[in-house]
Image (cartoon, rainbow, N blue to C red; front, top):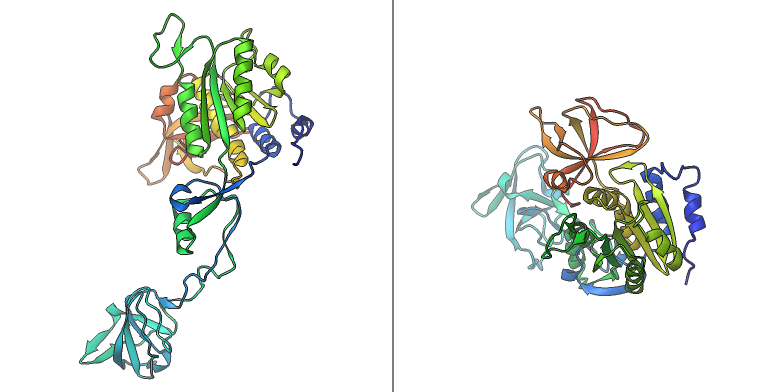
Length: 423
């Protein structure tokens, strides 16, 4: 078994950056390089493979399409029979339908009625759409201007037997499942799902259904974390709420490390008197505490207990979600063996000015829409406090203002990450 990367390797990736101003991009890249993808391939039925990660490349066992065929309903004929200047008159010698090819070859001066997907008759090399022709008695009348080879789908033009249909590391989409089915592949070779354990920390937290006393709040972070993890397609293990106690935290960390490939906690990574993560992790494994140059977010821990990697997120609800999406998500996808795919952005016009100082990346809740001129425009949801989860629910995108960018004037273009497909 290959030795896991060391924390010295991790530290070297972050060399040159101050501990309290670590750029998000640099941290994300360093963590991804530190994590080793899961191993172990299992074969699952196609209807159970959506969102799973291919463990090895799928090589096409057949040509797709398997034969030359018609791309349209119309008539198959020989281009050599077409008149270059006037109308061509051809005899209709039968019909070819998908799944029922003609046995006889096409003779000079003949045409064949053909349906979309039907095998091209031997001797034919051109399709004329049915709406362009006329029939008169038993003859087909073809207008001039047809091109030799038009409206054909050639054997193997989609995939040749022996070529790669889908690469290893691809998260399977609905189209991918259709492609595999078109090859006759009944089961997909996928990597096992990573197991991710998560919990919340804090004496003030109560689970839904429990009464609230003064100073207590319901634990929302476990529900957002559960949902975000579900969207990634990992096996999720909920360890509940852990009190602010070194012994309770140590038990939770040990339980998580014994059953999971990754651990995610919320709260307990700041410098408060009741934040025991540093103390417990020093006993169980290795950890680094960072102050990221981002808003919301900033405090974050990353470590390892045995073979399990650990992500310690802030406690404020919006900071949890932003840190997860823009730091942890890529790391967990890498853990799952998925090929890297940056989140797509939409360029939109800012409807209002946005205050921002250079030197940190800011993630702002916003609503993306289409302006009167048909161009994309974006408006912030209002107050951007990291505890205002309602504004995250009201938003449909995140405006991402890069580390080096300053204030934004109304009308300037900003990058937006849409929630559709993400949240």
